[in-house]
Amino acid sequence: MPDPEANISYLRTRIPGSVKLIAVSKTKRADEIIRVYNCGQRLFGENRVQELLEKKALLPEDIEWHLIGHLQTNKVKYVVPFIGMIESVDTYKLLSTINSESRKINRITDCLLQIHIAEEETKYGFSIKELTEIGDSGAFKDLKNLRICGVMGMATFTDDADQVRKEFSFLRECRNRIKTNFFASEDYFREISMGMSGDYEIAIEEGSTMLRIGSLLFGERIKK
Ligand SMILES: *Cc1c(COP(=O)(O)O)cnc(C)c1O
Image (cartoon, rainbow, N blue to C red; front, side, top):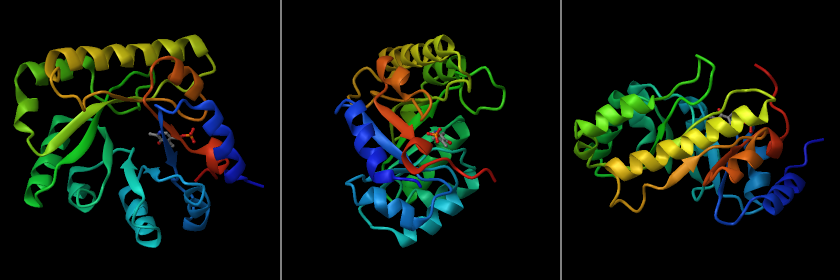
């Protein structure tokens, strides 16, 4: 039997107070999510817009939702009115669309730059080269309705802890480099969202500021 209450108590003993925990609730029902909410958790992450909108309607208003999955530009307008943070921004076109949709409703939207750090071809994300080019062109400065708060990445799905550590360490270097070059005076540019159920301890050691944890909290997801 899944025991989210015990899981969250355990996780809280393992996670330093300075590191935020995003409870990844994708595929989980509202009644499962509310159990974790009742333990005091307020940050939740979903990876699909449709599923997020359906669950949001059933759950308490004071949940802060993070979008952690690939976002299509035509769906941006549905999330911008309420989203706490879009962690998975992976193209300049998407940054620009989130900016313009936010401007329309007079909001500032918090985002992270997703960086491709894994070996797998399939994972989304910017390369550090692309981000450097965008930064050098001055284009980050045009995004007045965004607060770019840092970076996000997913390590390769592997048992090789050294490789995962190297990828997380690289993501931290990317954060530092982009910060120094383009966001030196923006205090809010500081986050590194990295670490999932299988690799969160390495992520903490490598300087994660936000963990995204699903199965370790809610139990294994049924494969769809
Ligand atoms: C599903 C997912 C997670 C959580 O994965 P677990 O291994 O269940 O902890 C974290 N980040 C992203 C982007 C995800 O899609």
